[in-house]
Image 1 (cartoon, rainbow, N blue to C red):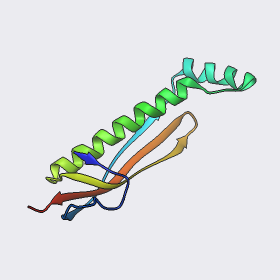
Image 2 (cartoon, one colour):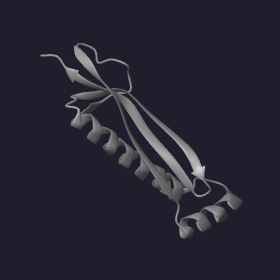
Image 3 (cartoon, helix red, strand yellow):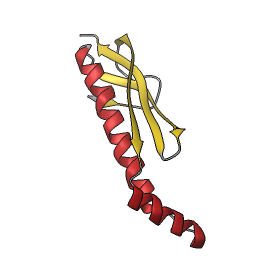
Image 4 (cartoon, one colour):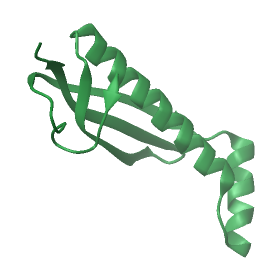
Length: 104
C-alpha cells in the first residue's frame, strides 16, 4: 500500500474510493506518568511519551491501511495525522486520507 501526504500521485490515474481512517486512544501508565512529572522539573524530551505517541501513530496507520485494503485500494493520498487529549492521561491519535484505486 502506497501512502503519500501529497494530494495526488504524479503520473498515475486513479479513482477515489473514499475517506479512510484509523484511530486509537492510548493511555499512559502510572510509571511513565510519574517519570514524566519528574522530567518536567528539569526539562527536556519526555521519551516515554514520545514512544507512546509513536506507537499510537503506527497502530492508527495500520488501521487506516486495513480499512483501505478492505475497499480494494492501491494507495492512500493526502495522509494526515491528528491528536488530541480525550481525558487526563489519554490521547487520541487519528490517521486519515483518501483511498484510491489505480486505473489500468
